[in-house]
Structures are given as C-alpha cells and as structure tokens.
Length: 318
Image 1: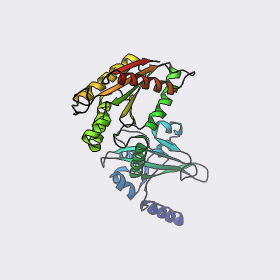
Image 2: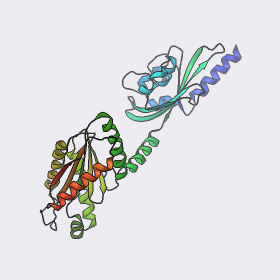
Image 3: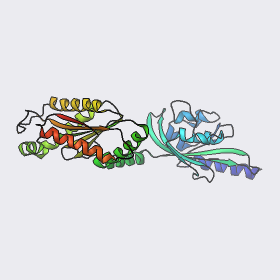
C-alpha cells in the first residue's frame, strides 16, 4: 500500500512539473490536478480549480465543455460543433486531439490552443480519470493564416488575386447551378492608365491602383461579393445571387466613387480625374455552359464601354 501511495505521489508531482499545461478530471468531471504550467497558461491558480468543475473558466467566457469533459460525458459526436478541427487518436491511443481559438478570460488574451485528451481506466475497465494537455499554437496558427492570405491575395492592392478569383468563380458557378440563382460579374478597367503612369510615374501609379482597389472594396455592401485584381489595371467583382440590374447598380456606384476620389489625371482626355470603364454580365449558370462564358461576356461589355468613349458601364445578359 505504501509503495502504491508513493507511486501515486510521484506521478502527481511529475505531472505538476511538466512543461506542458495539463489538468486531470475524475469520472464526475471534477478537477484532480491543475499543474503549474496550466496555472501560467490560464492565469488561474490550482487552489481555485481543484475539486470543482470550473476548469472551463480558464479557456472560455461562457460555460462549455472542454475536450476532457467530452470524454467524461461520452459526447464525442459533438466534437464537430465544439472545435475548429479534431481527430482521433491523439497522443493517447484511445483519446482525441482538437484545436480552436479561446478567449482566455483571466489573462485577457485570444489564443489558438491545440489540446489532447485521453481516458485512464483501472484493471476492470472502469474510468478513473481523463488527462488533458494544452499547447499554445497561436504563433504557428497566425503564421499559417498569413501564408494562406498571401497565397490568395494580390501583394500590391490587398484584393484577392486572379487565381483565387478563378477558383471562386468555379465554385459559385456550381453552387448557383444547383440553386438556380443568378451570378453576375463586373469587369473594371482604369481609363488610360498607361498615360497616367507615363505622366506621374510608376510609384504614383501603384498608389492609384491601391486607392482604386480600396474604393472598390468599400463600395461593396455584402460579404459574399468578391473583389479581385484581374491583372494590371483591371479589376473584377463576382456577385453571387445578383441579377443584371443589381450588378449594374453596383458597377455605377463603384465608378462614381472612384471619380469622387479626385485623383488627378491630366493625360486622360475624358476627365480631370481617374475614371473607370466597366463591363457587366449576368446569367443563371447551367450544366451546358461554363464560367468562361461569363468572363467572355463581361469582357465584351467592357470592350464596348471603352469603344463608346470610356468612363461608363455597359451591361450584357448572357
């Protein structure tokens, strides 16, 4: 009996001094161990947590189960609703691993935590404890997010890049084909941009592109509207569930907002300021057609806008 007690005390002391934040729940969900690393991570001393079911307060502002609770309460079917990502197994053979953002109430920080939880059974197969370990993955997650953003955005303007636009066009085409919703596309081109660069220089030209991109973004009212830099001085806006008349209204608003910026363009020949020409196309996607047709029609409409004197929009219904 003494040997077993000594072994238990050794195990507890070892867990207390692990560099990985760790806590242990009993079969009723009460905290048995809240190690020093867990105190540092959450800002909550063990004296406040041991013997309670308040461990969630270290990670969430509102009561919800931690991964260890999910195992204690046998609620593993709910993991998809509780975590951004999860998998089985974890570092424990019969446990789970999961990841999510946590707004840590006591330290007032938002951290991305990777957690592992696994059950411990006695020789009769009865649950005696669940161990959860927590690792701060915030820096890695932010770096990953930054890389993902760089892969889909244009480095100069901050809008989505052409590759991402093409992917989203394909996706929205399929979705609208299933739902029967309309899909609209606006193609926009800065009028006489080569003359602008020749007059003011490429650095000023870059600032012009950034101002135009920002104005396009601010002119859109829905989160589902997707603005992108299509190439050079050409931009596009993908508008899901939008008819031609709605897309035309948005295009006119963008063009008006650009002109109101008052960016001087002495070499324009059509205005004192930087202006846009726009081509708009809309259709209800079908299995007999493809997204390239929408781009081609918007491009034709843009060409007509330019041929008609620029600083205007032309609409085309597929």
